[in-house]
Amino acid sequence: MLSLNPADCEARQVYKLMTGIIVPRPVALVSTVDGKGAANLAPFSFFSGVGSVPPTILFCPALRAGDSAEAGHRKDTLRNVEETGEFVVNVVSEALAAGANATAADVPPDVDEFQLAGLTAVASEAVRPPRVGESPAQMECRLLQVIYTGHAPGSGVIVLGEVVRFHVREDLLEDFRVDPAGLDAVGRMAGNTWVRTRDRIDLARPK
Ligand SMILES: Cc1cc2nc3c(=O)[nH]c(=O)nc-3n(C[C@H](O)[C@H](O)[C@H](O)COP(=O)(O)O)c2cc1C
Image 1 (tube, rainbow, N blue to C red):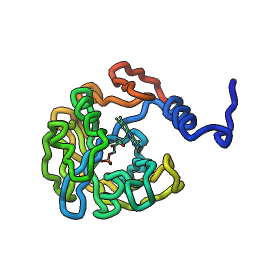
Image 2: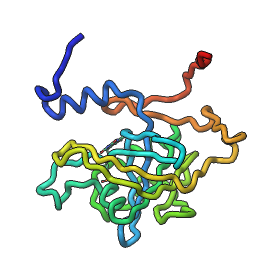
Image 3: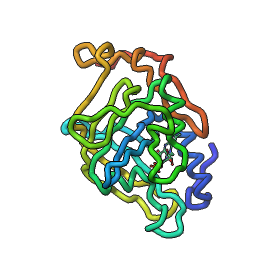
């Protein structure tokens, strides 16, 4: 084994280690709105569930290099979540992957990534950010907490939210069980590589 102390590595090298080791990661396509209601959409693969009572999820926008903490340091998604306290996580199927990837373009805050990627904005029930119509499952969330793990470019920010509405395509749901084949979720590996969820294995739980 090669043992590495992150303190001896460059930030880029640590990022490559983490995105290579922590695989596969589900992709949250996150919709938000700014204070004026303008929509924003971006994918985040540092994303997970936390617990079901209350239903809690997290995703992590990293800080980026900016002129100052005020200018350009926070991604639009983080700025909007902090401003409005709401977001929607849209599950990414293979059919949606190219569109989700297109929304990762580094564009000015006033650019609506729904339009950029040709995706359909569908009104949410309990929050202002719209859902992505092409997504097979969506979770409307209210912000619980934002935790800054650091303040340098590359520092992760944990956005914790409570799910206040689940939406699942009707043909995918039977007694609260989601059909994984129909959901056809994709995940992210390192770099530009994504992964499908079609090659699955079942393991019986030990008694
Ligand atoms: C599949 C995928 C996963 C990504 N995951 C993350 C992530 O977990 N954290 C992050 O900060 N950026 C991530 N990005 C990059 C952001 O999507 C990108 O910086 C985006 O422009 C942010 O948009 P915003 O400024 O509108 O929030 C990811 C990009 C892709 C394509």
